[in-house]
Image 1 (cartoon, rainbow, N blue to C red):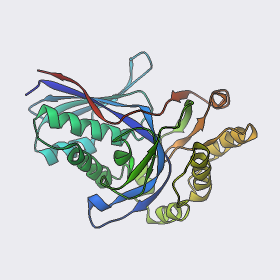
Image 2 (image 1 turned 180 degrees about the vertical axis):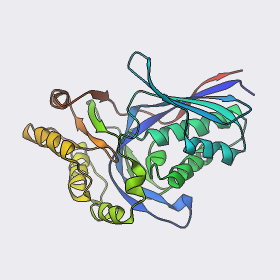
Image 3 (image 1 turned 90 degrees about the vertical axis):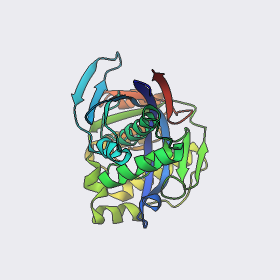
Image 4 (image 1 turned 45 degrees about the vertical axis):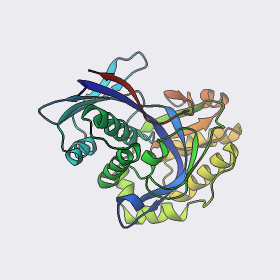
Length: 287
């Protein structure tokens, strides 16, 4: 078996979603639309006598700016696989900010563990385990399904096996601004908030980039999730006809086109993103 395996999974910005509760994990999740982004989570998996996870956030030069040793969702994956491993995850985007990083970390970890321990799982089976852990820990609903491939996605059913349409029409950069983390379980674990979110769902797949931002913005307004900080920045974008909405679930904004950079940068650090061309993948296997 290899001494370590490295995998990468892109993140995902959700523009709008509707929770779906099924009979099991395969039929539970969400429908909705978003953008798979080029930034995500790099994971290195190595064999160990114990289960351990180190989560690191890096700056643009690769310097560690935050680190903690805990990830119940990834530990859950190891328990499901019946293995012990030392796992290091690295990302550049802020955690808990609506960039789908929990799903990316789980999907990259599952893929790398599958190779490192010769588990013989299919890509779909790895995704199923990652999706299950997201549901169990209430860290996401549809991001694992989305990040199996790239582009602008519309998920037409819950779970990994549902139909997903993808468009590769995000030609300009997407700029994102984050004010603070939004604790996903506080929304995904609240029946009252989920009812309001479900009622705000647009009900259609967007045919164009303009439709996607229009549907996302309408959802943000009706869902009850908009924060004062986000509303203030969206008003500035509106004044310049810049397409923008709230990252779901995160206390931040994503906006389309070069002009968005100048607006968002007045309110804090911005991140320039592109639509990913592909999904999760193994990068390196070291024997």
